[in-house]
Each structure stands twice: as structure tokens, then as C-alpha cells.
Length: 413
Image 1: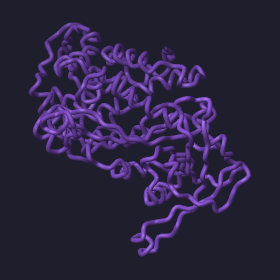
Image 2: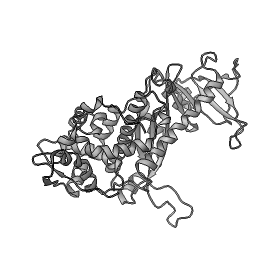
Image 3: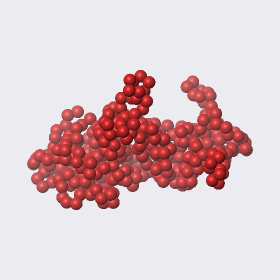
Image 4: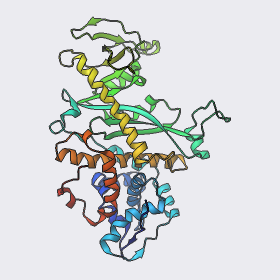
């Protein structure tokens, strides 16, 4: 869709606009300045395109994936032009944008995501986000393609390919892992690494985001003994699927048909003093579903069948699939099915990834405002509709101070 390039008012700076943008309601300027200062990346003098503006710009890149760098600048600058009237053209070219992105790197955006991407649901307003007082979260990984540049290929690697002459796929890929609040789809933590990284290797950086009062769900890739030990040590309860062929001896049959068993550490871990871990095993089938497997098996830290009946946990586990919807929102709607990210170096790929996560969280934050005000389940509201709302509203949001608009009723789509 064509967009008119905007100009800045006389004496106005992009940073003045961006500090009052919709994105700044989710990622406050004080927090942005804080991470920039901690990493020594903040601007030391007044610039037309300072570091704080670059942070918001990196988020906006994922809101407008089809637009060129300069066009994204024009969109985010449009608010000032609209508010102040026509004046001088914005003198920010592609080389200035690239230079600022290189100076910023990925670390400030990664830290900003860690600080600002917090859980959104409250039990009083959204009880579907909780089970027995525990916030429902899920963790999983996915891959995405990158520009086929030498540096990206060397750092992230290619998937294999049986049909390619080169023996690998046409594009390098990165692997990511995210921790998600199931009901709101808010990303609470994210990590990125090479394609051949193990998912658990990437997950360990997200474990500090878990804690007491959470019930974390995961698929079969996360059921190693040490994985279980590390995750349960956070204080969160676990509900993880495991292979139906895994040997789990029945140690105590429980009243609801589940049973207690134990998972044993490796011989090396036992030599170091590790002991077996008691788990509860829930086995169930879905005979009404022709596509279902003959048997499903879950492991959980919730050992009491009275406070957490097996049937309830079996039903609950399927909320884990909400994380697949999050990956769809990231890849299909935010990126508009673009095959690859923009960035041509590993550091900028990581920066773009965290900007992408931040943009997703901003859309989900906006949707949450409507869900909370109108007491609606988040599933009844359209992510795509709110994404388009944010894309339309972002260019004009500079006309309003960030606190004034908080009193206005959010739109529900």
C-alpha cells in the first residue's frame, strides 16, 4: 500500500515524536534510555536521529515489513508532520539508518524485551489465563529464514536438503525459543541462536522468567531429567508431554487413573550426587479424533489428583498449542509472509528479531486493553485487526502525549 512520505516541522526532531508514540506506551522512554545507558549505546549529543529513536525504529521495521528503510522512517515521522504542518523534509537516509542500527546492536533491544514484556492477564478479569491460581504459560521453539549472506550462513547455518546440489537449503536459518502467556499470547521471553542450536540450550536463558505461581507447558522436546530439574527449580509447576514409549514404572496408582513414577538421572549425574525425581504420569486417548495418536502421555509436578485431576490436566494441556498461534502471528501477520528477515549480518538479525518480538508484544498489549475494558476473552478479538489498527494509528500518535490517550477507550475489533 502506498504511503505519502512525511516531513518534520521546523525545529522538530524525530526523538520528540517517538517519545510520544503508541510504542512508547508499551516501552516507556525511560526504560529505553536505561538500557541504552547500561550498554553505552545512548547518544552523547543531540542528533536528528538519536539512539532512543533508533530503538523505536527497530520495532517499527516489523510493523511495516514490506516497506523500505526510508519509507518506514517516513511512516513513523508522519505524526510530527501532521501535528505541526508542512516544513522541511526529513534528512535521514538509508546510510544513516544503517549506521545507527550498527551502533545500537542487539543487546539493548534484548534487554528492553526482558524488562518490558511482562504478563498481562489478571485472574479477576481473565480467569481463563489461570489454573488453580497458576498462570498458564508455554515454551517452544521455531525456525525462520534469513538473507543468504556469507556472515549469516557462517553464524546461523543452513538446514540440510536432499534435493539441493549443495546439500543444504537455499537460505540460512535461525532458531528461536519463546515463553508465552497462553491466554493473551504475550511473549514473556525470547532467545535466538544458530539453526543447529538445541532448543533446550536456548531455553536456559528464559528460565529466570519462570517462577512460583506459573504452570509451564511444553512439548516432547523438553523432558530430559536435567531439563526437568532446572525448570522445576524455578518454582514453577510443569506439565510436559513425553514420548509414549518412555519407560515410566508405576510406583503408585492414583484415584483418577494417573500414577506416580520417577525419572532417573544419567550415570554421570548420579555419580555427582543427583537423585531420581518423582513425577506424576497422565495417560489419555482421544478416540473421537481420527487424526489423534493412540496414546498421549504427560508428566507433571502436580502430584495431588484431588487438587489437579488428570482429566482437567489433559484438557488443559491443549492450551499449549496457543504458542503455535503466536508463531503464526509473528510469521504470517507481522512479517506478512515475507520469506526472510531484512538483516544481512548476524548482529542485525538478532536486533531485528528482538524488534520483531517487541512489535508483537505491542500489538498484543493493545488487544489486551480492549479485552480488559470490555471483559472479553482474548481469543474473541482479532490479532490481525489490532495489528492494522496499530499500523494506522502509529503514524499519527505523535500528536498526543503518551498519558493523555490512556483515558480513551481502546477500539475492539
